[in-house]
Amino acid sequence: MKKVKHAILSFLGLMLIWVMLTPRDMQEIVAGLIVSALVVLLTLGMEPVLGDVRLTPKSLWYGVLYVLVFLRELLVSNLDVARRVIDPKLPIKPGIVKVRTKLQSRIGRTLLANSITLTPGTLTAEIRGDYLYIHWIEIRHEDLEGATRDIVQKFEKYLEVIFG
Amino acid sequence: MIKKYAVLLLLGAFALMLLPFVTEVTPFEELSPVAQKYVKDGPDELGSANLVSSVIVTYRGLDTLGEVAVLFIAAAGVGFMLRRRGDAKKPVKREASGILRSGTVFLFPLVLLYGIYIFLHGHLTPGGGFQGGVVIASGIVLLLLAGVSAKISGTVLHWIESLSGAVYVALGVLGIVLAAGFLDNRILPAGEFGRLLSAGAIPLIYSLIGLKVGAELVGIIDAMQKDEL
Amino acid sequence: MELAGAIVTLLGSLFLFLGALGLFRMPDIYNRMQAGTKATTMGTLLFIAGLAMGFHETIGASKVIIIILFVIFTNPLSSHALARAAHKAGIPLAKETVKDDLAADEENEEGAMKGTQEGEEL
Amino acid sequence: MVNTLYTIAAMIGLAALLLAFVRMIIGPGAANRVVALDVMTIVSISLIVFLSAHFGRGIYLDIALVYSLIAFVGVVAMARYLERGL
Image 1 (cartoon, one colour):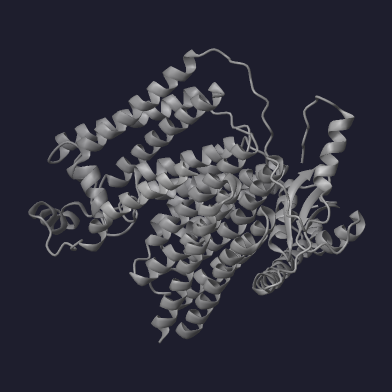
Image 2 (cartoon, chains in turn red, orange, brown, purple):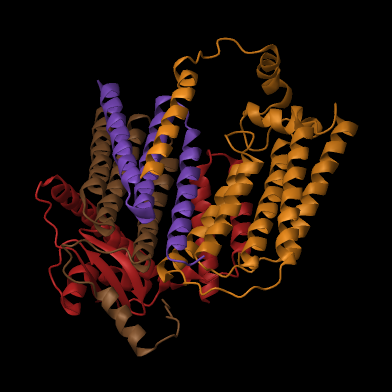
């Protein structure tokens, strides 16, 4: 079941990317159908990472929200970097903290790690089991719970609905 | 310390030597007669939007066959040299991060699609068989780097490689029979300029080259990885 | 439209510059990566998007979107791989650093099971 | 006016490239150089897209995409080498 879902979703995704790469033309679309099917067949033996995606109206809506939150955090984090870099005193208080994630899906965790890396002052350095180790440019909480609340949960609540 | 400055000095001297090539370069105002012929006749004769591709695949198609053969021999040599050594003791290797692994699994189909896109559009955009093959091989390198187990079947690789090579030569011979010469692309209709199915057999030949190059490079990478360097 | 594109591109180039400046000023490799990754991702996004706005007849928007998505996905991934590698290779953190949970945990584990390989599973 | 703004943006991008290059020269150590290289490749991708717009050749975008792919593979390879994973 997971495999079928993964195959269908990756076929659609590849097809979309093919259409975006090529000029609008009937021949290209036919070629894209063949090539996408071929790629899906060739990678069928690999982990069905997209099989975790839930396709309910709620998860789609949360996907949109996730993108918006992500963009906002990206902007905030860049302003934060700008502030720190330009400030002649270089206000940093760095360290590596440990946080916990509830996500089980692999692709969900990858997206979480990537989102954390791109958001204000944090960089995913390592993952072991359910724990992520985050390099934090200005530590605000030294304990697990506080750091988890500050770093992880703003994305986790969306990704949890989308991937589980 | 002295070594560092010596290196810097050497680099500086080298840069000074190369400087005239940058400052005194005069752009070509006129093409050479050979180039002029290609530029003038190429698009009309072969119907390919990418002139470089039509030169590589048709006008100089035989040379390309030679290049693919060189690559094949290199691949075979690497495989031969590496396979002979027995299993040395395995050094302890650190596993790749799980995030990197699932990211790679997600990216790999995209890389594969992009490689195929490049060699299918060799007659329209920059790129072509060699480049597409390299993109596909880099996807496999990514898999190996991230420690995703990719069961690469040697038999399938050899079949792809030899079949595409054989069809490539057969197309070349077909060019002699049906059109003007070896590897002439006009064995298929020229099609509408700038579309996917145009420029006669160039897309087909480029796909074959792409498959062959990709299979050869994957073979090299696979042999190196199995050898546990 | 073109003016807006030019301004967006200019903004993007400023972020790219800030990323490089952060690379230059920060005290250790981890902090450099922080500045480098975030600022360059945002910078590339704005720079390319601005170009696509200004030159939409030569640069198709769809290919630009693919480049942007690719960069957004791969840039943090490679930074993560590098940060992990730097920590494993034992590159020290800056002297301002307050705490290092990862090193502490790794030490505890080594003490608990001497000689066995660490098993990291996602 | 608009073109001047674009040119200024490209100049700032080049300055960023130079700054990252200085970090690559002074290091210290391989890891810092790889980080600098990573930033340099990202900036170069932006500049390739700029050149594509400047010369009016949309097909150069393919080069930017291939370059970003190869750069990613290269950085991951160096990271894996540094952590003794190869």
